[in-house]
Structures are given as structure tokens and as C-alpha cells.
Length: 139
Image (tube, rainbow, N blue to C red):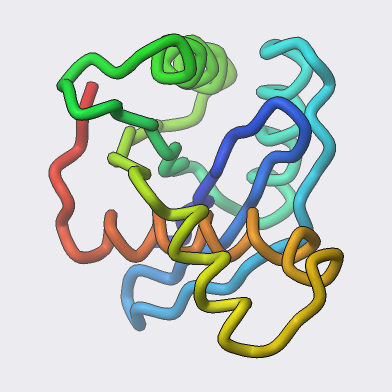
């Protein structure tokens, strides 16, 4: 199965494609967030269709609670829009994925601009990897 990992942000949306049979996850170019969830969901669904994906793994930012805060509510709404568009969606705790991605990129001696370009896709890779490792899905 091919899954699309999504690291949602208000400015950029990180994407990655995972191949569940072979356990390989590859970042894709980030997309700019539109400022509205429905158009963002439609863009993600179009990418999923192009990549022949029917399963989305969406990062859910939890703040130490099972419910999370404002951003978690927004991500749940995005998940609903993606489901309405015919995609199966799993929510996976994405806590610290952007920080971990930034640390990995810093270790490569990249400039801040270079790290910014790659961070969201790498965070989306980590979301998919958590899903593949069987991280508990959260609804």
C-alpha cells in the first residue's frame, strides 16, 4: 500500500510517500497552505490521486493530552475534509517531528534557508515512519 504522509502547517504542508510493503518513505516537495482547509484538502487529494494513493497519514499535534489544542482540532477538521473526498485517513501523533527533522538537517550543516525548504517533507516522512512502526492511531 502507498500512503501519503501530511505534516500540516499554516504556511507550508509537508508531504511524503511511504511504501508499506518495503518500508521506504520519500519526501515530496511541500505545498503552500491556502489559508482554508477545504482547498488544502482538495490539493492534497489531487496529489494523492496523482501518486495513486488512497490512504493518508495526517500528523496530529498533541500537547501532552489525548485531545491536543487548537492545531489538533484544525488537523481533525482537515482529516474530515479528506475523508469527504474519499480518502482513508489515519491520525498519528506528530509530536516533535519538526524539531527532530530540523536537528537532522542541522547535522548536515545546511543553511537555515535550506533547512526550511526540507523540514516539512522530512517531518512528513517521520509521520509515515511512525505509522509504519504501528504508532497508535488517534481519532
